[in-house]
Length: 299
Image (cartoon, rainbow, N blue to C red; front, side):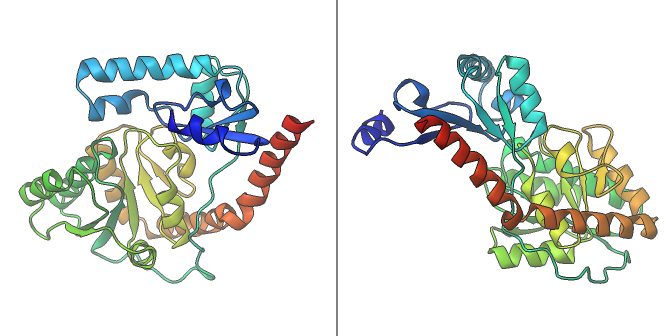
């Protein structure tokens, strides 16, 4: 293992962070010092989005076995949903520290009247597990119900061709706009212009783009899945729909479009909360925790 060979050539570390994403580094068994496991999400059903059934079943099985093998290693995660899943597998110590974002919240919440058309945005890697097709279908349903709306998809990935074809078939007028990857400034501008961010992922460790949108004064409508139920507080900073279906998203958007007072309430609460997730607020807490782990290792 290249990581093991490289580590052996270095002075002894006080702390090694072993990041999990489907497969771990097995660092507790070779690093020779205190090890902390870091994980965004337990992939679980996400395996099925990328692999054939047999491979996906094996992948999910070995992931759970590996996490069980790490049950005595302290874990760090940002999501209470992930913490619960780890504890169900048998992990004994899970420390929760929220994610930070680089996006600086607007200094003041600017005016954004809820006037038609309803401007919708998706910001995501265009991958199967993100289920961008659900957002496109929700947009098409919204248009069929007579709600004026537009949809912009920001990001790139392996599913882009399929998504473009789906959008052309289901929602040709006005067409879905695919921007491809944007700079941070460009992404922030799209988030600030939009009325609502849509997030229909299969599962998330957290959903940082929700907080980024909130920082730009834009609430989100999200699926009721791990991670997203934390980054969006239902009926406070946005809407967590009751089911993982495009119909549920379209219903929520149609109702919100006719309730400007509720929309503005979501905007303000989302913007105020997003300011607490900037790295300037989160990083000192994370650094203090890591320092405590390193000192424990050297004591």
